[in-house]
Image 1 (cartoon, rainbow, N blue to C red):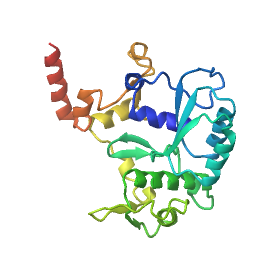
Image 2 (cartoon, rainbow, N blue to C red; image 1 turned 135 degrees about the vertical axis):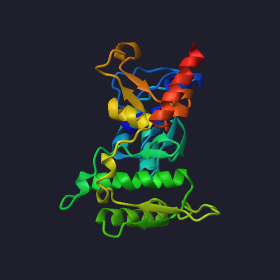
Image 3 (tube, helix red, strand yellow; image 1 turned 30 degrees about the horizontal axis):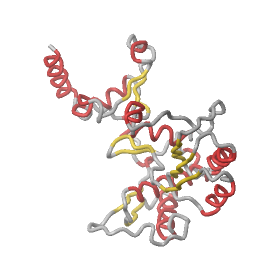
Length: 274
């Protein structure tokens, strides 16, 4: 779907996917997809009402020989029943829950594809935005196998409601009544700290002098992609460059270097090419 497409692209490139014998990557909402016989499909989707509607339509008129469904969060029982009813041709071979209902930018950083949280400012309250935040955080905790103590900023209503919602999800199995879902054998105490960004207006105004920060400041980075629109190099690279510490060894070593250290690293790289 529209969200998991970007999340998967952050984890595996199309080149890597081809190496894993993936024939192609497409979206459920593509109306021009043609039927491909003898090809198996792996669907990685969010368990949302819009995605359920698309999946039911796909299963009623299957494009592929068989389907393996992977949901990025807990799948409610009523959705599973609706999918079973739509699968009249019995093309679904397996259904799994893989907790990746977020976009991993690096091993230490993720986001939830929420453009703005201004809808949670009083007197407004966008429940859809709040629910997406809670669902994403619950998925993060499940993927990291964490059942933490939750601490939140006392003077923030949003932080308090978010903390209470996550606590409730940990108690009721993320709204599935699976009481063992968040029970993990952990040796060390874990803490989820919820703070309100509005209480620190200064940090966003500071300019970091690391390689990644300067790239974002000068060219803009979105989902680990650097836009080169309007630059002479745009035509050569198709308008953007993907930053991947796994595939790009220089970026992996230099992404957190400051300005001075970066100059030395670039000098060393130039000497290697010479």
